[in-house]
Length: 164
Image (cartoon, rainbow, N blue to C red; front, side, top):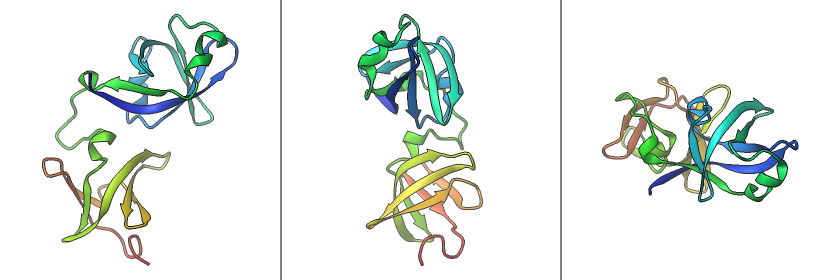
């Protein structure tokens, strides 16, 4: 089984089995759709309900109806099998596909994508360059090409974005 970790179950919420998940999933509404399944640790669970509250994804799981049932899940990773991921358009990518790609500006290596983070404003590529991290908005203005075959991303940053 090949799985993608997309978050962590960090706590319980209330007494009726609701759990808080910090998720970096790129398609949360699809991932947490009622009836969909994912893994908490090694256990396959089914979504019973989903809502967002204070930047947390709050979920109830089918068959886990009180706090005592879900307490044991605290701190566990949540994941999904790669085989259940939907096919994307040619110019679309899952976050995990971008992570590990090398980033170039002209012919110069800028660094490597270590994380992709979805923020209210836009999606950010977090690039490790030596000892520092650079945040690049994943928008057409900056990201000019993603070469998935060669695991490379080509960017055109504005002045001051990469170096001081």
